[in-house]
Image (cartoon, rainbow, N blue to C red; front, side, top):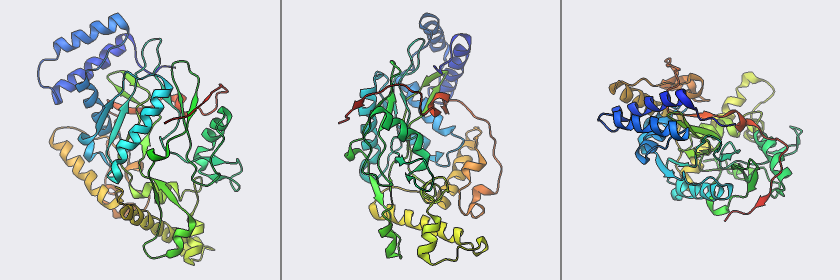
Length: 379
């Protein structure tokens, strides 16, 4: 399935984008460019963005990300133009390089790598992984599962492709699963030097290190389509940096993820027999303190939810001063802990989804289609 638009709808989307680009980024008459794009669409069924249009579109797609609280920095996004790449081997290799460049020794860079777009009768490559770095999950029974249950389906699929699995720890790196024009998914193990992980410690509790917890430094979304002017770039992994609550209040705490609150509460000596003791709340705070402390100790960029909430309001004010409306999803913008203690809680938001945008293509959710695959080493 391809996600680009075709015909009159594509021409309209393209014209709207070109006019937006010229209004905000390249003042001047867009008539000639629109005519050239229309002619290219009539001849080929699609069109190619200039480098300036690609850079602008990718940045504005971040600006328009309703679920992202960190959009104040949208203009700082770096773009790696890899539109000439459409084969799975090269996508995997460049995805690993994306992680190296984004990691930047711990000073995380907002970065996107844009691979070949969908075109008529020529679909672009797809990365099945939700993020470039994810942890495997072995076992189907919740109580017996080892790893991150969110990734159980993709783990099983990768094993079915021939992946032998990792050492069996709760934090085994999943391989990338990538398909290109032949629609045959393949798996690629990430080189260790491409993935920076942070060991989690608590600022006061020495026993915390004995839990063996860690998390990866770069949250690079991999299974969303970058949609610019009607053209879909289905493989366009992009990242900012983590907000601590994503790790400490969701990834490690959610009952359908690592479900560590009971473990932390027990080690803290909290009464877990009654929710009214607020043991979950107290454990959550200590988990999040550990994440921020550990990333700071390791010299890895991480945001806290109070600071990022204030910065989001700065973003709203800045965009309003330029006459632009900011769309936002309240349920994602408000942090998962201490929501009412942050300024983003006490207001409502326009939920309009503006374009360009990062969008999910439906088949990105498919994790087992019964197709064959092959093992390929990534260096």
